[in-house]
Amino acid sequence: RSFLKKFPGAIEASPPIPLAETVEGMRALMRGEKADLSQAPLDLSRVPEFNARVYEITRRIPAGQTLTYGDIAIQLGDRSLARDVGAALGKNPWPIIIPCHRVTAAGGKLGGFSARGGVQTKLKLLAIEGAPAAGQPELSLGSEHHRGLRDHGRRGDPSRLWLSLREREFRADRRGSR
Image (cartoon, rainbow, N blue to C red; front, side, top):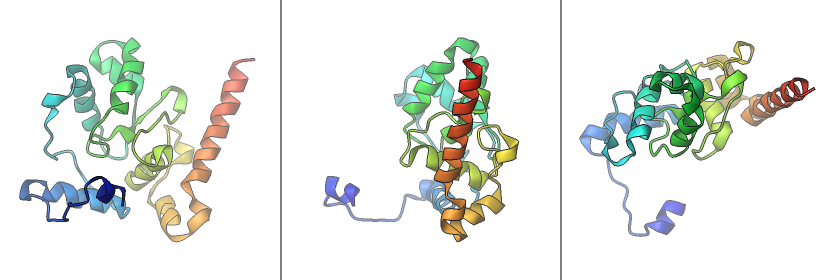
């Protein structure tokens, strides 16, 4: 609806042939199916060079795996760039295609997610891909959990899992500050 408010004359059409596979892959993800978007065509020429380097590294993270902001910073040659990596991913113009949901914070924390739905969307995408939630294997969001999200309503509500993760982070932070 909001798109039509911004562009009232827009008409839905089939995607151009070179993008049809990418669009179908994104639709598959939204249906809860796995999809490989690593070969989707992108033009990185309009993003800052640092961001493009971050996006290229992020794009190589396989589905079902995660890296931390610090891991990417190390690949860039300087661990102290972790916050800059987070800032670049916060400006990612192609979330999902450049899978910034696969990047987590240090210490098993989720970190942020700037796409619509925020951390809940990040958790859902990690669940579809079978990735451990924020590097915590005991909270793995494999396909069984995802079916629970889809088929059993609130029982598998990702916000409940997110709240559980946030509570753990809070407790760990409190223990560490004593």
